[in-house]
Image (cartoon, rainbow, N blue to C red; front, side, top):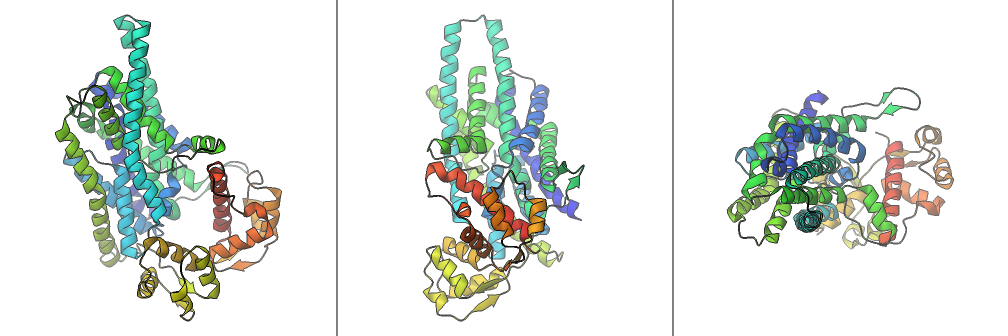
Length: 491
């Protein structure tokens, strides 16, 4: 049954391969630099490599935006996004898979009364604005540099043609790798909490985890979309916005690919933070938006006289419609799956408000007078708890998100023997591991309680001051803490 639910994610992956991968090589095939078959082969190989080698960077952002905790819910979210992309694509609109999956997750949040992490949403929306602007700038600069280079070397026309074809192959490979790295999260992100796979142990030292199996399956669905349908989606971006030359085509692909790489590379994030510079948020961004931004950058570099503004308006319309349509579809399908097919689309969570919880909420900067004046209470669902908070006057989404996070009841029991078996000693310091061992057999009702106990035992669990140079270190620490909590959570 779990595999049937996963089909919606594979359908979304197929749509992504059909719609987004075509955008990578559409400009190259429309300018006759490469044959479509050649572009498909290159893209398929490097999408797979990108997803498997670098696909983890942007994956957890979608999980933070909405914790879809039941596989029927994951199916519905993914199917709603896929159907939105497919229907709008059939209408000839250039759509963004990123916007579709985000819209569907927001629909799930609304249906389940789960608050939205506004920080994660702000990062994603910010990337939607920054993405085409950066792609346009990078395409413009690449075009200028290539033109300067070609004027200086003064190659024969046949050699220029060969050079452009070789360069196009490398640029498409880079673009496909970046697409796989950044976009695999859209395909399997909502299934991470409810994966149908189990770990496969080949030997004591070699285990194929359920997460890697999930990534590989999602990547294959993208490849199938590239092979079977991408030829039908290359025309709009490839030639109708602005007539591209081989040089401008390469510039557009490289500019868009570089943007995707920046928004998914943990190595770039670490490098920028190490020199005290702010890094790009690791979020799934749209190759469609990047390509359109790149084409516009080239069009403006040539004076903007021959740009098809009517097509741009149509593309912009698709970007506005996509998240709204995905959220609407998700709400409708969640209702049907839950009430007609009697499937659990979300797991009801329990919450409590008591003195300790209220103190933790207060430490996050939220006024707690309304909560402190009430007696200790327990709530059996998201809807019940949200209604209670609303009656107390809590309406800000970021307040609700933090209160939900502090009040949620989760059970944890620390087992040092289990920790010794499961925790990689190369990932943790000896002091961190010793503090975990010191908690042997202790139990906790809230995630923050476990985290606070760890920090009380060792300063190495405490976050560093918020500076660009410490940003990556704090992120690594957060990943370690989440690993500890996930390991000892009593399901």
